[in-house]
Length: 427
Picture (cartoon, helix red, strand yellow):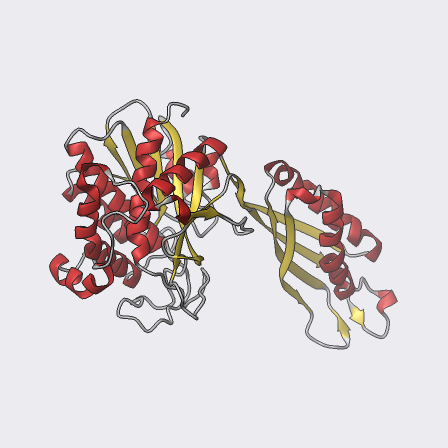
């Protein structure tokens, strides 16, 4: 039996976090004001948004199980007079705001990671070994805030088009949730799509933008070797699988680097190796597992066949039998040039141009790439680091946390982005 994920009393929750949000400026220095007095509205709702983030953080749900988080989002959107639609499985939400044939989509992800939450904070995860260690609670809260803000404009007929909010499940697993959203009509009539991702390496108040390759494709490979084992005193009578595994571990990545253009950005790294137990016995089976990450979409198409051939070529002289299991992950995120220009300009308007910096390329994977297969779009990095803090966080760490002022900055950026994209005739 699951319990509905209900928000605490808004007034009480806001009072607990009002100290954190009392300093939010209505309009950051050098920024353009939002239309319809939304800056003032955002400041007044800041503590409530922080309370939403903390509530989601304390009640995380793993990939594919985001039913209560999705229900919470749908309830809040409904209270704002909107008409959200649940995904077929009930663990994601889509919601259109405004009217028009062209749609601008904004995406957030809902799922948490199978990690313990080791922070000593009041909003620490209440679910054993499940934690929002990637900032998806922040992404969800920001997009919810964007929806509530845009609903204000739509109610006054001041929203110049249609915006679609996509609250997506299962970003952290394969198969991931983006194809489910697309299959449910998430990209129907969409002209462009935008998203942000928490970046603890950037201090709060900054955003990182980049046109072109942004994150890498992330595939998995498993190599299984079998052969005649035997005594380590007589390896010539065996297929020495440990030796053969060593050749795979060293030679295949090295050869791969020389078979592809260095500008393709390929990284092959082994994460698990297993073979044998006894020091004086050559085993009959060995396994190596790893990841292959690629920035170039063209190279990504060629890598599975190339890597499989390299493995067979390297193993052939050893006499071992080999089976290669290559599993496709997510494509690379390659940000569209025009879409990146739009969101960069919007971020400059939202926060001030001096707060927009160039983002670094990441070799991590992100299933936002599936949306970019169908429509132009761009993802940016949202600074969530605490300025001046000696403690440096990274995502996917059980201690991960954010400077919650990033929520307000994120809402401002994405509202400006939606309005700018609706006005851009090129989409």
